[in-house]
Length: 71
Image 1 (spheres, rainbow, N blue to C red):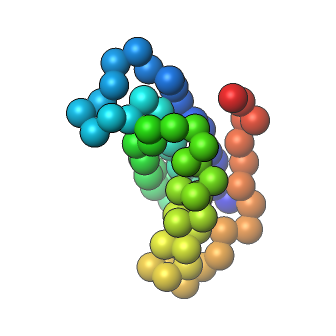
Image 2 (spheres, helix red, strand yellow):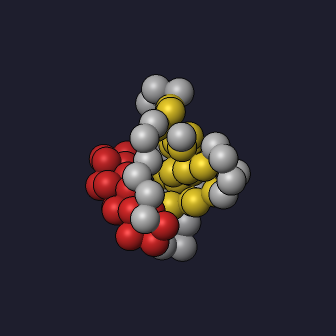
């Protein structure tokens, strides 16, 4: 089980041009990943990349994704 939350847009742009950030928290280990995004539309691709990384690095598949269904 992982939890997702998207934050933004922020008035101040990050040095890399990002105005949003995506936090991903593993429910079991409480490990946290943070991704800076320039646009909300990048969430879907970033999540795909994250799931691929987890499978390759840990040999596990994420079974459940929980989100607050915010904007």
